[in-house]
Length: 118
Length: 114
Image (cartoon, each protein chain N blue to C red):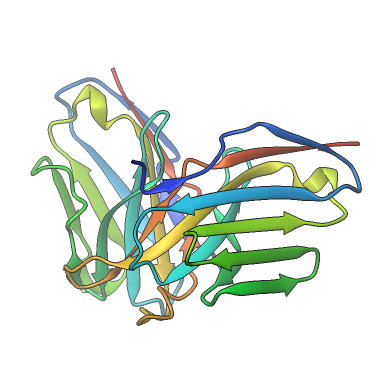
């Protein structure tokens, strides 16, 4: 079974340009998450989809970030226009179960998309 | 105060020794606790989850949780060079916006010396 796949693995763009990152979750996983790690910091939550609906987007840093999950399958994360501080690694994760007090269900992470903004 | 705090390391242990990784968290409302292993350039991989105070063992790995002290640890027995990686402590808490979020520490880099 294929894991979570992300594309591109690395993107280098100039400040002000637009980048779109794509995530294909594990087949059948309704829950899809975006996280990111900027240089020297910890991995931080961005948002959570349940199927095609945004369950929680409280971690999105500002309105330059737009996430979509049309049809409840793959998801895209667009950054427009990109700024220098957006550089980092963007991780996508998926899970079958969105748990209650017992937790989130096991999250399966992709290898990340590294974004470098010059 | 950082929400989830770990020593960044590197932590170096000889092959066959016990590696001890520690993590503290600030949110007393946290309910679930996880250890992820991440090899360089690879995806974080869940290796242990723990929900109740005490110890949980899985093979060479033991997770320990003390909610009163807001402390989580991971012990790796009989450490192998293949255990060399960054270990991420993560805590799940209700976001108030409709889902559980994982809050990560920065990770501890472990190096097992042959």
